[in-house]
Image (cartoon, rainbow, N blue to C red; front, side, top):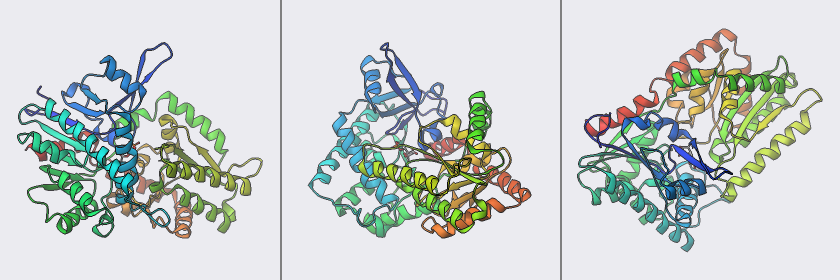
Length: 462
Ligand code: F6P
């Protein structure tokens, strides 16, 4: 099958695919667009482009779609046994590799690489092999295969053995850990991950910082990069889509509802995240509490609009974190709230239209991750903002490399510093705020998803 990307057939592989299915009460299947940064980035690959997207079946609805052969054209979902997938996704990818690359292990949450870990690792290998075999089966002679993320680090090496003729790339949507942290993994596993990735012709990262960390890991633990090339592609926001979508009627409705919830004439500090440890939502709330403590003049005059959408709830550490976010938001409201003012408006039900409404009205956007591959919220807010918005941005987010100059930078661990940054952001003169927003929007949209994807493809096949 030829694709519109030129002569080579294009295959994409990722854990989460572009659609997910739900079985409705009448037994029919309902398809919904998948979420997350990776899907946004790859949304440029429409079904008409002739590319094939290989992904996991993730729930009962997806499995049913596979059974009925009802999937969308251009998508092949792999029905990997649920226990193998759970070990690979929850056990290895999200509890180990995610934690290593985001440097989230801290006392008392340190890794224990025991027999259970080894058992899960075997599932991770099985899961990666299922992808490699499906790709080997689907790929035409000389096809270009673009593998995504930390779930599939072994696929390039496995596929290379099965199909030496295809061109392979791997793209990391996360940070990459520096060698001193990466070496926490057992030696054989660290070597296996690097060797798996180095099976690719080309590796892509979101920032120079992550690419350099990977290269340093290879130098220390794998004898260098060998023939594998490394490139940096900073995924940007899709301006056309966002500007159109953020003015549709459902967003307008949510804007009206949010304004009523916030109250007349108040300033807003907005954040939108998956409820994820790396996003640092708790320290964000502590910084807001500190702002209200230190500068009582803001009481009644500001509202922290925090959207924290549940994520990876199969993992206890995520459930605990979600509970802590709710507890702290409740505590702040209890302590400072008045009959006419709710200091923290917390919503946990994922609603993209409401997120866009919040972007539009935000005076300040708080994006303070401990570590983040890029962070698309930081790039989306300035594009959508109605009247200019000051971005308070962690210097540990990949987006800081591109947006740092016009944002108010923060050390994500420094709660007092973040409270000061919020005050500074709230008091920036409107003219400067608008100028900064314009420059941020230009930088944030410099590499839109379609171009981001094409650049990688050209680098791989060109
Ligand atoms: O690279 C990070 C990523 O894979 C993004 O695509 C997305 O933001 C997030 O993680 C999704 O995580 P999950 O698929 O576990 O919900």
